[in-house]
Amino acid sequence: MIVEKDEIKRITDFKTGDIFENTKAGKKIKEVYRCQLALYASIILKKQSSLPVLSIENIRGDKHIVELSKTFISDVKYRSVELKRKIDFAVNNDDINSLAVSNCEYCNYRIVCQSYKNNLMNKKIGSRIDLHGKVVKVNIAEIQIEIVNRIFIVKKIATDKKIKIGSEISIYNLYYPDEEKNILYFLDNTIIKHE
Image: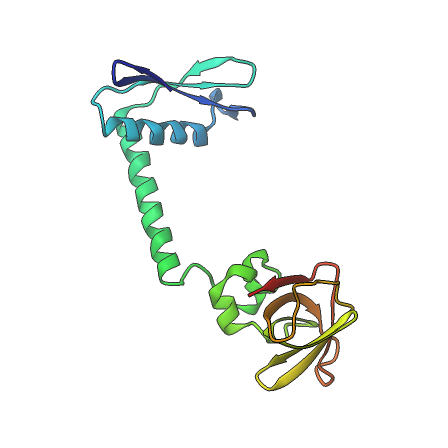
């Protein structure tokens, strides 16, 4: 950004990757970059009436002027505000996910998903389970966790000095071969989260 006499005259967005996309009409600046510049320009237009010169500069120093109309800038701003409103609504109403075993079983974000924790945590899914409970015993390569008056033995657990008797932990991706025995196994992709 270059500022001249309290007014922004130019916005340059620096990019390290390819800035062009191929279209039927030939090469043009990627739409996502045009939208980014439009958002930057919309912020500037709140403070001044004149539209700054918009450009993108690649890592080699090649600068490309990007022509955007105030209508395009206004439209991108409206769409971004609307998208933010929808995301905020979904997050605030805990409606951002579609809670189902098929959606959650391999989801990397279940560790931070409150809906998952409230509805599917401590339930066997296939031959796997994610547990949240209180540590009641710590042995070498084995711990015992209590969950609602039921004790689970977790074997082959990696050494973790943070695991203490009485602490609450969540363990994700445990192998659960036999529901009758309550014996679980630590896997290479098992994750421990200290609560």
